[in-house]
Structures are given as structure tokens and as C-alpha cells.
Length: 193
Image 1 (tube, rainbow, N blue to C red):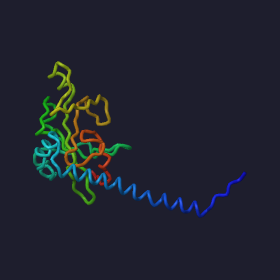
Image 2: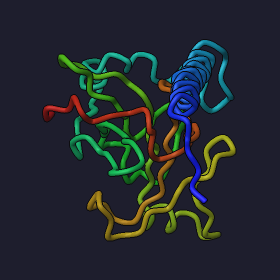
Image 3: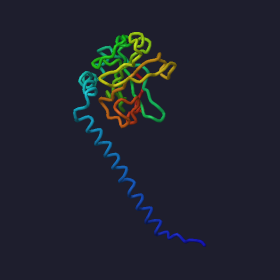
Image 4: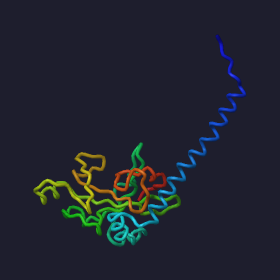
């Protein structure tokens, strides 16, 4: 038995479905916008607030450069997880075997269309051999209660094994404040530093 499908009914159902898609997408987008606004305009958790207090002056990348931060690694992105952005390293802090909330080893910027860069995060980095040599108990770095990630060598960054902690203090990250990658960061505007 063949069923006849009414083309008017198909058109009506299709139109109803299409009408709901933009509303759902807008609701998600508005929810993300609200979360981002709340993140930037309300007092953050203790570690995020400490990072903001310590790095507010580096929102201007020229101030970071004047204080000894230099660009490294280009603009770091992932094929399916967003990006980190452009890293600026203060070499005098790397390899000292310490982590200090007021002195991040790396500042992370997102390149802007038309030039410039926006501070989005910081990265604390401790070389594993130095850290492990100074901490016989084998414990990874801990900063204000937050454990660092461990990255073995070899790795895509061509760095020795290291511990790192990203803190997305200056841009909302739906993947989490301490995630390595931010799906809302892009390297599309990167022209080379």
C-alpha cells in the first residue's frame, strides 16, 4: 500500500522546523553571550582574580614587550578544539623552578583583525626536570589549589617535558577557565609576529 504524503503538510512541518532553528541558535548564542558578560563583569574566583590583578597592565601588548615578554610559537591553534593564541614568554621566569601567580611565564593574546592583539589568558609553565628535581615528593605544581597539566616530550611545541596551567582570565572559555584550548579563540587574524 502506497501512502500519499501531502505536500502542504510537508511544507508546513518544514517551515515550523526552520522557524525554530534560529530561535534555538539565538538562545544558545544569547546564553553564551550572557555567560561571557557575567565572567568579565563579576568578581571572579580567587585565582582568576589574582591573575587579572597581576596582568591588567599587559592588556596592552606593548607594555608586555617593554617588560621583557617576547613572542614565541606563532599562533597556536588546534584543528578541532579552538586555539590558545599567541604566546609571549618572559624567558627569565622559565626554568626557575617556581610558580608565582603574580609572574606568569607566558601571556596569551588573540590576534585581532586589522592588527593588534587582545590579552585572553596566561600560562604558567614549569620545566619538568627542574620542577621534579626541586620537589622530591614527585608532586606536580599547584597554584592556589589548581593542579598543572603535564606534557611529555616530544610534543608539538618542541619543548622539553613540562607542567603548564592556562588561566583564561581575560576571555570567557566555555571549555573551562583552566582548559588548554578555547573554542572562542581564533588565529584567523594572525599575520606573523
